[in-house]
Image (cartoon, rainbow, N blue to C red; front, side, top):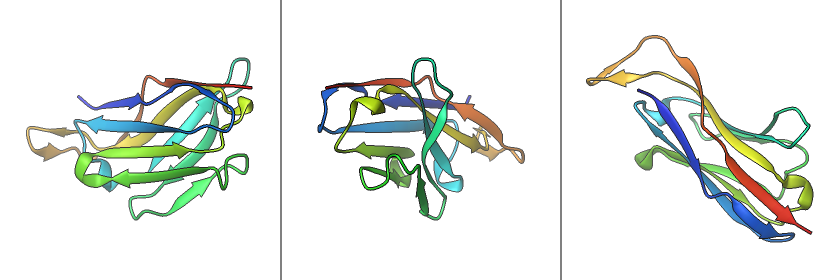
Length: 125
């Protein structure tokens, strides 16, 4: 069973930093692009950052220069380093990826879209 589990959220003052982690089980993370989304109360979910299997990255304009996405394929984990946090960064942050399940050492030929459960980030002013 494929699972994405986020961690690292919390309460921080404006200007502070947090590092979110997204760990995958039941699949090989390195084969696929991974994205971080966020959803603030009353707002639509939005793409924050993404990283391809080759390590290319992209960011929403609102977080460029402040957030950094990275991956550690050996740990099957993707990170989101968030610096210079602002109150408007307050949201639930979700990890998302299309992954190929691996069961009993066999990799599925079809990929499926998976979401983590989310981790709350609250930035106080």
